[in-house]
Image (tube, rainbow, N blue to C red; front, side):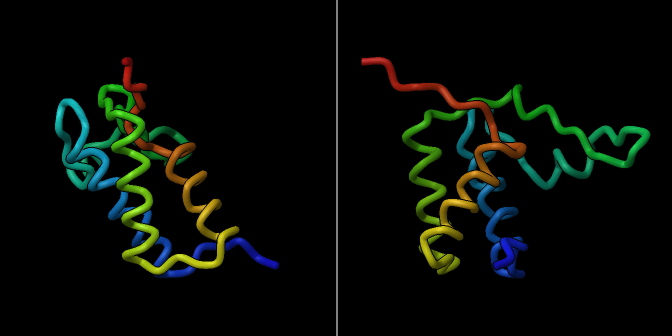
Length: 98
């Protein structure tokens, strides 16, 4: 069994990052961040994702919306998608304090 991303999942990851950064504080444009990213000697792009913050509840909602919109199935692929977003270049999360 391969967990290699399908084409629609790759598109979903990019769209998810776009929405997360747009909804973050400060609001960001993920495409611009990628275009202006620092590239290290190994060719990896580095974006300042820790400069952006989003409430965990809102982040989870955006991730779920993308999973539904891009029809990511079955459950193990949904979980892999979530891990990809959360462990990738997503904005840092803040918990809602009550």
